[in-house]
Image (cartoon, rainbow, N blue to C red; front, side, top):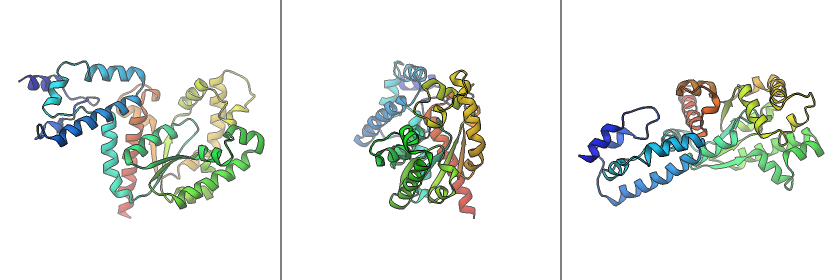
Length: 296
């Protein structure tokens, strides 16, 4: 009776933590299901770590502080977290990947590394950051230092070498590429050995992100001497870079538009999105690509 009352209190909404499918015919008291409950709790902690602070507080209040949460768990009903959806999407896509790797492309500051790590974890793939691999190959020299002491051309050569190595020697990996990797046609030869995903972020949102953290680690922005506030400088420089790269990004297998995701979730700004929500959309777009691929 107490559990039934708890169920009635949780009405469905897109952000609800309750997966209604779990109310159908779940076994009670089994060791295997107890282990699943423990695993779900662990994944929920992982999911919370990817959320913005205000959203973490809200979700904790809705799931942990409610006195009837324990009653729901005792009946064998699992709390639904954003990472659960991520895992579900990954499970739907993985059988059709046939071990193919994924390459994330996009402008600097678009979140390729953050989203890539989430996708790799959900798939059980290994994650590689192309810039980090280049730095390691250069004895720990940072990307900014490589640009300063050796020039962009040396960095681009190292970038191509790294992509070639990844495409030939590794399978079942998720790779975060550098923002400028798309400008060399030879790089696409290696990227297309897997599935490429373009994280399409509005320039205004990119400028806000980069201005907030500074440009020291981004050599193509750090050298800007046009003056003005950090946001204006970042936006103007990003606009110039976009003119030379924008068309190249359209070569990607799948496009993940943050503006579209924002609209889908009913958010006001792109900045309201969590990395997990972006990763879920990425899997959905990959699934669309695979479906189209099967038709040809």
